Length: 185
Image (cartoon, rainbow, N blue to C red; front, side, top):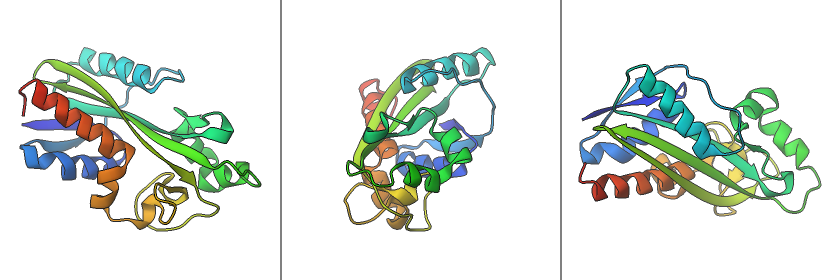
């Protein structure tokens, strides 16, 4: 079965392909703009996005919303992570964290999947910390400033390792469990 991955980020498509192809699910990249509701809740953003996509007649797709939630910044940038990445970038987050002792943060990924007429929404989390400087050249977004193990950023670890521990990887595991429970895979 082919699932459309609705995103402007080809890195996400590659991560989904790596995780789901073993179950006979093929990923197709689809750039389809849709309105993202302005709310602090990832699940609400995904649910409303799914409603709009389905209203356009599209079925069998995956859409997600992810965010970096920094403890000392009261959850910022959170659901506004894409905007923060475009406007202030990694250096802006590091500047906001200058002199801050509590560097705790978590990535969250909420996946919405429309498959065989069924709707599934799951959320995965990865706890870690914000580094003091960017490091690594793989990954995308905030990967160069987030470490899950205190030693390497997400930009410094291989994709397989990242998928095993990341927010998206954890959400994909939950999605796979749900697909199995519903006898889809």
